[in-house]
Structure formats: C-alpha cells, structure tokens
Image (cartoon, rainbow, N blue to C red; front, side, top):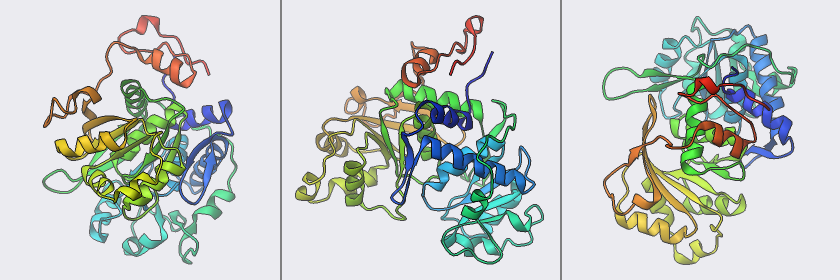
Length: 375
C-alpha cells in the first residue's frame, strides 16, 4: 500500500500535473508549481550539503513572506524538521526554543537578526548554518538566495516516511516553558484532506493566509490548499491594514481567508464608500478563529461578503482542528464552537479523486480495499 503523499511529494506532483499554475505568491513575487518545486528542491539539497541529516531541526524566524512556503516544502523533501519561531519573541525565549530542540540550522529574516545574534556559540549550529533572508547579508551569515542558487533542483532522494516528524511547533500553554508539539507528515496530510472535504474546498480556490506563518492556523490551512493544488497567497504585511486586505482580496481573486474577530471588526468599520470600491464577490468561504465573535459581527460579515459561507473554528497547536461551527449554525448556536471537526459520510478516497485528480484507496477502517496512489 502506498501511503498518502507528504507535502514535498504533493508539490512535486502538482509541478508535473499543472506546472504553469501559480502555486504561491506574496506582494513581491509569484511562483508556479514548477518554480516552487524547483526552489524547494534546491533548498533541500543545499541544507543537506551543509551536513544536515534527516531528522535534524531547522529553526525559522521571519515575518510573513513567500519564502515560508519554499522552506516548509524544502524541509519536507529533505526529511528535516521545521521549527517555526514566533517573531514576537525576545532573545531569551528564542534561545530556549533553539537550544531545547537542538536546532542544527537557523533561517532568519534580516530585521530579526539582532534577536538571534546573541545565540552565537550554540554548539549544534555550525557557522554556515546561519542563513539570512534579505538583501544585505551580514558577513557572518549565509545568504538564502546564494545558498539556493548553488544547489541542484533535483529531488533530494531522502526516504521520508508518513510517521516522520515534519514540524515541531512550540506552544507555551499556561505555565512553564514552551512545549514542542510534534506534527508528522501523515497527520498533516490527513487533516488537510479532511479540512478540504468538510469545507468543500477545491483546486480552483485562492487562499489568503493572513495569520503568521509560524502559527498553526496558516500552517494548517496552507497545507490543505497545497494538497488541493490551489493558489496560496501569503499576506506579507508586518501589521494588519484592513483596506489593504480588501485590495488584496479583490486583486488576487481570493475565495478564502481565516481571520480573528478583530480583523473582521476593523475591516467592517471602514467607510461604506471604501468597502464598496473593492470587489469581494469571489469570496465563498470565510473562517473566524482564535476568539468568539458576536452576533452583530457575524451578521455584518455575512452582509458584506454576501456570496460567502461563514465558519467558526476552535483548534490547538497540539491537536489541530477540534471543533467547527458550520454556516447553517452561525446564528442559532451563538457561543458554541460547533461539532467535532471531522468530515462524516464520505471517505478520503472520494475527496482525493474529486478535488486533486489522484485515485486513492487507502481509507481508515477500510484496509481491505487499500491499494495505492495513482498519479
């Protein structure tokens, strides 16, 4: 039986099936699936060339930008483990995570370099494993673009198993030091497919990721749309601007985004003339997450985004999605975060064949029918 494809493999599959489709973008550049896959392979090969081995941890510290998409996929291809670090943390907090996970490499955006320079001397980090994203690379850092350009774009050939760890996401909880939540390839794949099935997402969607790319919200939703072969737009602003949000939705033909209630309230508070100047008619799915929303907020969302269905989600870094309040329950079940977030009545084989174009007979509880992926 061939197991589900991991994210590195699924981007490679989309690069074969629809190479010229835009897979991901931010405000600076766009990548077709073919370009995305090639750069992810280059990054994977470059990191392995630095002496990293399957299972090593790579800490990531950056604001939202399209490089996150390259890095997540490149690490999946190399069998390396992504350790996303919240850019709001200060040096002692970053030091704890980097040392606790025994990171072998750091990838850091230029503005955030001062927060990590104090970590020089960390035993697990070699001199070449300090990788800098930005235009002016300091002398004691390795330039991200130079690292990629010097590596081959062939698949790295590392055997990555479904049960292998893909991400180690630190969450502070309520007491003590941050704890690392282990996310493996198979769990991410299955949650992505169930998300798409439950919400009716398709390869024709355009998803806008506004939440930080170091956060489980963007990681989980981004993964779901990657599996489908949809386009994923990364909002690369350092602070939220509601009018820019509407401009991005209109110009990129966005069909889905996930926001916290404050984002919606700020957007809906814009003058009517401003809101009317942007075409949001293509939006068909909206998510409220991270905090409860009031009845008047929900009604205003549904009025302005008239063609969209509204969902509300409760989840955690450790468990992924926990409960989901669906469109027909939004007003009648105020104060509730819905039913368990599990698609019922349809197998994953139906989802994969219908939305991705790949035949799968490997469904939980139906092992007697298990065959293989056919790409």
